[in-house]
Length: 460
Image (cartoon, rainbow, N blue to C red; front, top):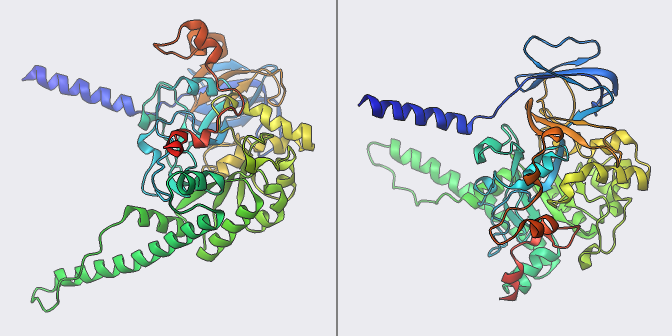
């Protein structure tokens, strides 16, 4: 009996540790601190205690027992945040219905994907994991911290806002109209899908609340003077849509053309929806003042274009034009390869549009944090925020700079000085080492990441 008890104790301890999110302490001294939301601090010190930034300044002292890192000649900045990623998903598109608000990426996280480690090597600490863009109203996303080697639960960003994926234009019309012969087949149909489902959700809520009220009255009527109400079943899809209308869920919408961007803003205004981000948004520069007026966000590529017909009208000045019009804009990857050097993508806004270095860095730190509802926790070096940082060999926007160490909650997850060789290949039983080394990354925009898994469906 005692042996059995001991076994349960061991299992219990293992279960707790498996889901624990490690928090560490570290002191970095004499570094250039890129705070993002405040001035750059030369010869600065930063202390992270139990996963939280507790001190920032100069001539600080390290507490006893805390690891000390010499930051002389190095730059420290908040971890990069990618607002649009499919980095470690195991489910990309639930493509059989144009509205799938009830599904979620919550259980579609692969914590062992080696691309997580490669993203850490690029200074990325958090991602917004979404499925693809087959659905007009898709499923719910998941904001993650890249705690490589953890579990699904261990990777979740505690306290992050709920999000959902929408998609406009060619992707949903191709999958449903052309592929399945169902609505929507046109951009007009995309709008109709959104409006009709919001209307149905609102109607459902009225009926559901009336039923619950009548049910409560019936159950409290001990004399049986009232008739039992006709049940209105709980509908998870409509519940999620109502949460969107109520502002409980942040919308991230796959979009390209200016006309469809204007359309969704009009629709959202009609339903009182305020907090949303246009993803990709290649033609957002055409309607930048309107986007700013509506308080919408954008999350764009630095210069990707022409990989499909509806993105031929693009410009590398997109991010700069949006920024100068007061739009909170971020730069995302949508790619397991591009995520490794989002600092270079931000630097392109300086090169093409003469965006300030400060604003360029905001596009991969505090701006995506705002779009994900986590800006009070990460995205800048501030006392009280979580210790998600990267130590760079030089200025983060320089093509010559490398990430030397990456920390999440004060715990080190990447160290260039101790970089295992086998983390640079894809492991597959069908590949030998040489093949894996040369074909491990999808280069550039060879595949539409948001449309992964649906091309076979269209051909059927």
